[in-house]
Amino acid sequence: MVLKLYYKAIIIVFGTIVIVHLARITGEWDAVINGAPVPMWASWAAVFIAGYLAVRGIQLSDECNGKK
Image (tube, rainbow, N blue to C red):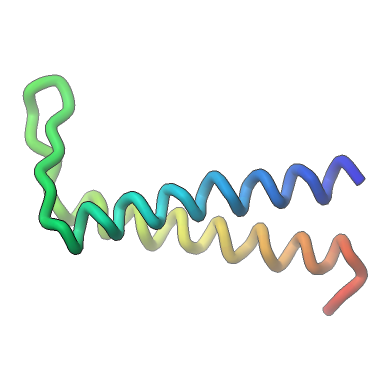
């Protein structure tokens, strides 16, 4: 039961990261960390990495529920 809750939390966290970075990409928002501009490719990398982790969380949650 605790493992299913963990996977759902992972899906929510990484899914939110994907949505925020996609919004930054489509809205062409500037990002600055401590005075240094963050390049757009960093958001693309975050979308792919967080997207992969969210999908893996979905797959593991399904395995935990007995689906395959």
